[in-house]
Length: 288
Image 1 (spheres, rainbow, N blue to C red):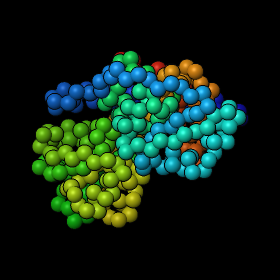
Image 2 (cartoon, rainbow, N blue to C red):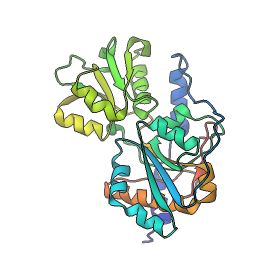
Image 3 (tube, rainbow, N blue to C red):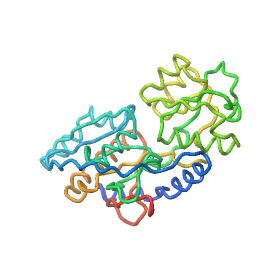
Image 4 (cartoon, rainbow, N blue to C red):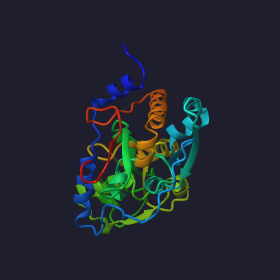
């Protein structure tokens, strides 16, 4: 059986990235909530491309990117191309995507809802690959002693969530499915890295979280009010700055191959874009 990055990427076309579905869900949910999807097109001057570096951005906590960084495997792969990886950990995925759009980093890992929230048509972002959907990796949780048993019980309650993330969109979808207006909840934005402390100090009544935070909270005892089953925005995507992609596509291919191998090590999968190509394609609000 053939091996190598192209063979493994081909195996990952079994599931398609539902970007248009995410955008549609976000647009419908935002229609009556006073929130406008899509960011603003800034006039920021893009940072120059450094051909000797690959600047990688992610938001903590991110198990795949953290282990890939610590193992040093990517450094070895990129050394053959005379490139050194440079890692940038951001407080949240919105910051990582903004840095990518402005050319301050070259590659970013975010949830698929993040570009749906923040990108505008024409933003210089290229979609590289996506993980398979994992609904159980996203949930709204409460302490075991809480009297919150279902989503409807969140009325009037304070919910901590990371803004412009998959968790944010999932919370919106859960509320919509339960007929609960967002205005009837007290939404409190919290950085993903601060979510566990927020829970430990009981700074909210419920928390919208994702892995690996979800597993760590479960080990201390929580009740899952609802998870991502039946909803969209339940996967991570890998995005690149369009200019870097045009000039150093082979570097991004090598990095993506290392990510695929790391995902395999975690016992999961990443698939290529559903457009019949193992290569990247330009991502935009209009065409998905």
